[in-house]
Length: 279
Ligand SMILES: NC(=O)c1ccc[n+]([C@@H]2O[C@H](COP(=O)([O-])OP(=O)(O)OC[C@H]3O[C@@H](n4cnc5c(N)ncnc54)[C@H](OP(=O)(O)O)[C@@H]3O)[C@@H](O)[C@H]2O)c1
Image (cartoon, rainbow, N blue to C red; front, top):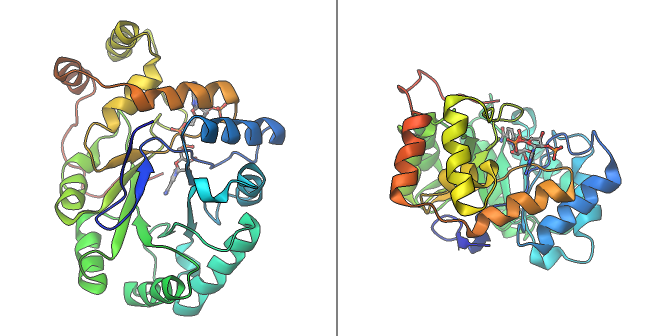
């Protein structure tokens, strides 16, 4: 598994991590085993949120006894992101996760509370040792400008955004902004949630051909493409050990420039949309 610095003052974090949205909906044993297998294979970056139902307690079970190996991320809902609300929400997440700290705490998306209130809560949580750092999610470049004005350089650890082969909008402004300011980009729904390219489609065949050349799976190729820039991490969600193992193996796959060009052509970036797409 490759590791790289998480933002400008962060520690080294696994480039491929594990998402947990809807992981509580299927077989619990299988989900816990999948997360544990993923951790064994180096996917120690685990993403969850207060919004994800029973995912936090499930993560607690998966990481029990191994907390120090994990880079643990959770998120506060915008409706809870007031000065006091964010602190209370964090305490609830810590209790559900059965831990005393988060490695990164994110504002899930921008809501009605002033950014300064949320940042004040985050900084208080940092001072209290409850979180090691904080970041944002679903922030477009203009939101990032505003957040930078509130937080100052080095404050924002990451921006977690929608990024997959058929949704490359972040490449227009968000990714360059984050690279310029030392902010990690975390690609969510890297397989398109439930919309991975069909193997029989024209673009799917390009993916398949590259995968075969490496003895890899098309999803491994997709993850390697998405994480080709050193600022980018990806957090696929898997509820079986087989899927987790498949995803972890992408951590050692490196694509050639010709393969990146072929994927760029098969899954074009398209024009910049008026607003940042999100799920
Ligand atoms: N910040 C935000 O607003 C936001 C929004 C969306 C998502 N997220 C985060 O990003 C994570 C990932 O996104 P996502 O859950 O939307 O979707 P995703 O990771 O793009 O795709 C998940 C789907 O891919 C399947 N899958 C995973 N590995 C596979 C493999 N190797 N082979 C075949 N199928 C495989 C999963 O099946 P199984 O479950 O059966 O393994 C599941 O159906 C979330 O879980 C969450 O943590 C954040």
